Image (tube, rainbow, N blue to C red):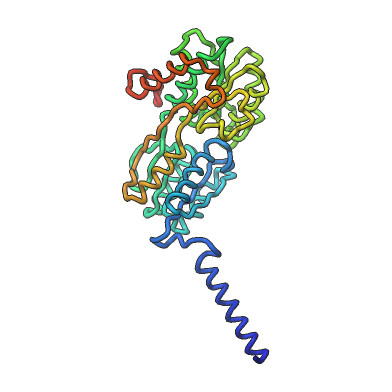
Length: 342
């Protein structure tokens, strides 16, 4: 074989390999194809492995990968000004479903939904004032799971003083957790003292400040609180971990079962006030594949996480009371008193 012919064949082979790589995105699926299900997730400011809110949503997307064969990916938002451009990274590729995580992405999600009418959007914690055909706002009754957490705290305290370390009050679900927690505690004991503290920063820092969470939890512990509710992403995780270093104190997690995500909190973590984000996200993706994607608001389930190693520590009468309260919240015979517009 002549040298020229060899070089020509090598060039043709190389060109065909490059072309193939371009056609399949370098090993990635063609999301514009009707035969491929692509799901993208855009986090709020923070990491996808925050052991709380973003991670719970991502696990729902990953479930779609394992059970529905979806091609999945995520973008971590570092700056709020990038919400729109981050969503567009998936929109421009023709993704089928885009999950945007957090109240703060609501406006950017609405704008993207208008720009990409053929893409379904799942806005986690994004209340829809008016229904848009391709947007489902995955919302939760955080006041109800907060109420259960407060009732648990009130029945487990020895000092008659409990606390909540929270993200910013600029986010309605955080306010709902706090109001529910206080109401649940007072449902058990009207004379209980509840120390509730919001992070003083904005949306860009309120959920990513474990140092502030730890310091705030320590202040509450020093004031006599012996049960700490941490509700604020990594900020809340800092409060849990700080409480875990104090023998005989209890802590309660948020959003997901944090026994599975924050092992450092095991010494104090008696439960978590869950909003079941993972099954909520997966369920909506599955509904899209079945042609039943809902427009407007979709209310996901809430509840308390298992007690795990504390199951023998939580008295049976406390567990029975929590079941009674849970049933009452579900059938409407017990009200949290929370008024979102109030």
